[in-house]
Image (cartoon, rainbow, N blue to C red; front, top):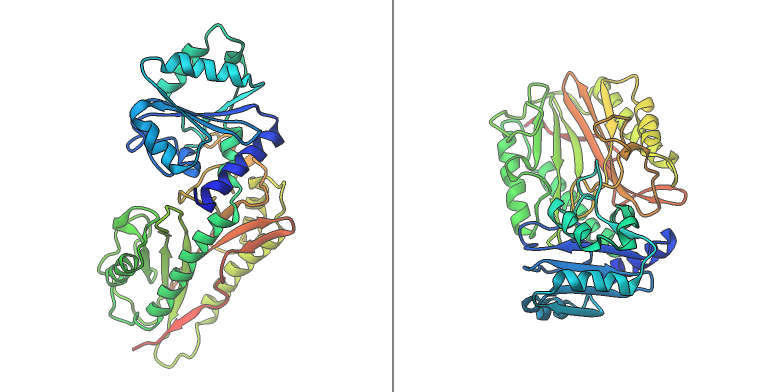
Length: 392
């Protein structure tokens, strides 16, 4: 078991003790096709038959899997005990829970967060059937463990994300020497696709529109494939790029340039002031946030800093998924329920991002942040100045 999975397993036990939960229970079947996202944090392989995974505050991890899955599960080293079943899965599931005798059984279910809501309806109904008539059917809690486990990134997770951020900054350096008037948005997209193949990266979102590329105010914004629109002098040039490490950990990242017009040596004041407002809002929010703040509080701070601009700011957690769940840096909405109310915790990794429309095109900057006791810290080098591209 490598340090990543070892570290997350140790974290599970710490969370269970902290929250006084006697058992975190995950279930799965045919996980290569339908898998609780939580399982990917603690187990690097798959199972075919219906299975149950038991984690307790003493640090012990148990797996109940079909006989043909036993050898593969054991080989990962992720479990202290691997039991194979024949026709008696349901009996063994109930017996294992009775042996553990937990005060609380936490399962992966949530009304609003897709990455917390990992237990399928069928397996939930099966669990309830197996617990019928026992005291454990009344001891369920929902999503407490996985929300903390997914949200609190350990060093080994952050290191993987930083590796990718270094590469994304490298591609920006390369683009600064390549992007010129006449280069199309699709040309830039193709270059970034080739860069990902070269460095064993995959897109953080749909391949057809990752990265997003915008040249000038005429560019079409939204999740669309970059097209034939060409860079022109006087354009703001914007790249929104997210890539995943081979391990599956994602990043999200935006950078902006200005294409100088003939006779210009620096961006016009209106563009420069907009860019400065964007990075001031990001940096001020990063410095002001603290553990224990609700996501909606952070969102208010962010957008207060942008109230004089045609801009909006926000953010989201990033981990094994581009939008990694757990909380939202957003205003209240019945659609996302309690997610903006969830307090931020030390170790949370998330973006702070701004889109600011100008007459020359959209300025977008997005930084990845890790929350510490005294505020947010940048995962890697932030953009501090609006880069320029020559007119020819």
